[in-house]
Image 1 (cartoon, rainbow, N blue to C red):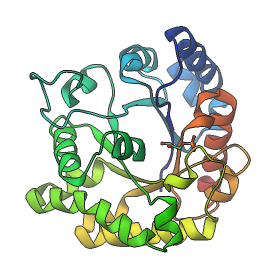
Image 2 (cartoon, rainbow, N blue to C red):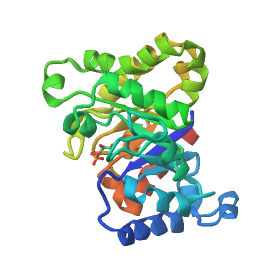
Image 3 (cartoon, rainbow, N blue to C red):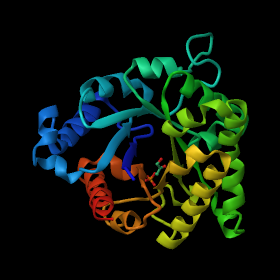
Image 4 (cartoon, rainbow, N blue to C red):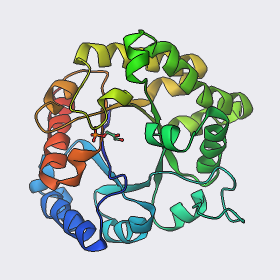
Amino acid sequence: MQAWVIGNWKQNPATISDVNTLIEALLAAVGDDKADNDKDSAFDRSNGCQLMVAPSCIHLAAVSERLKDMPILTAAQDISAHSDSIGAYTGDCSAQQVADAGASWTVLGHSERRQYHQECNDLLVQKLSNALTQDLGVIFCVGETQAQYDEQQTLEVLDAQLEAIKTLLDDQAHLATSIAKHLIVAYEPVWAIGTGKVPTVEEVSATHQHIKHTLAGYAEPLSQTAVLYGGSVNADNADSFAASPVIDGALVGGASLKADSFLAIADAFGRAKKSG
Ligand code: 13P
């Protein structure tokens, strides 16, 4: 299966100048010329692994423009629930605007959105629907808190969060194949985000098996959905996650803000999935 390594930049970097420095460092390694991608260039470092970055919405258009025709896709970090196009929704950016800015994907349901913006399933169903209307792929994030992990409630928490996808499918069953093409699920335990604490690879693998099984139960085409792990992934632990056949990539926060560590993670997944 195609491996994915996606950088979620969150509310970083501080300036467009810092954004440009990061992008140029990435392009210097993966090849800033489309023709380079066919050669034995430094692109081998991420070969077999699809790279994507999710800048803040203020930087999305500039990053997408620079990455046009390059081997790195761009994603938004969120889209409006209220309208897929235009409307009186102060502060929101719609799926149409995000697509027009050059992004082909959006992150949805990140735990920081769930925590700081009280995002619930009803809202996320709306956002999922708006993304699909505008042909945006969705990286749908799920994950349990530390307390839920300690109480061994992980799987039931994930089941409840994945219900948003089931609700969408119940409404639009005829779109299952299209939804499957536009969906990546990212398992991000809240307690592992930015903490340096990680679950064992065995724990993540068992959880991914559960997610894949659950999605396949919703609709057969979803059995092929890529499931990524996120939470304190770095250049040192990427190999161990990449070795698991059910971990299809990584959603990376802090380590995606430095080209070297981001590319080392991509390299780990690229190598593991090529040999696996
Ligand atoms: P860290 O890699 O910084 O733990 O963040 C993970 C994350 O939240 C990616 O969406």
